[in-house]
Every structure is written in C-alpha cells, then in structure tokens.
Image (cartoon, rainbow, N blue to C red; front, side, top):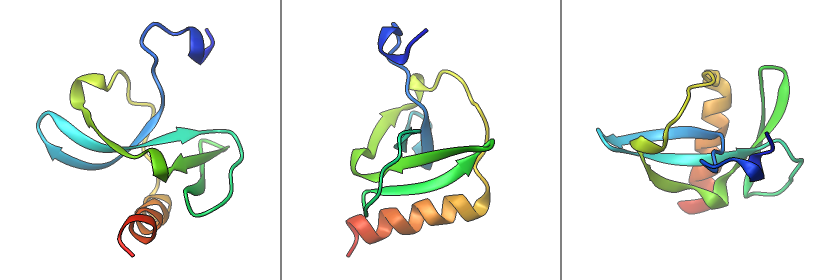
Length: 89
C-alpha cells in the first residue's frame, strides 16, 4: 500500500530523545535525495535515508506503531550534530 493511501498516515521517524512516558522528540525520515543543512543522510539496512531536521517535532508515544530497527551510534551522532547546528547556533 502506498504511504499516501495509508489510513494511519504512518511515516518512519528517528526517536531523537524520549521526553517522558508519553512523548518524544521525533525526526521524520525520507528516502528521497536531499541536500543542505536541513537534512542528514545516513544508511539504514543498506538504503540511503535522509533525516528531515526542519520537520522535527514532539510526538505522542501513542503514534509509534512499529519498531523497524535501530540506527547505529555514528549515524545518531550525525543526526544530533545536524540538529544542534541547525537549531542551536
């Protein structure tokens, strides 16, 4: 089923930080090629993914449907540094 046809409107995200039992900071992912400071590229399960830093937001834990894996520490560090450089400088 195409992502646009999904009734849940599910989208893959990276959990950047757990805030409390019911919420977390999420960074949406896309597989479409992007460049610039708003995006961080990394490889996940052999597929090039892009973290869309500009669309980061706080989400409810109830929106987590399925865990598809865990990004490695180097990729998580790249995303955290990109987030910091974009929003904290």
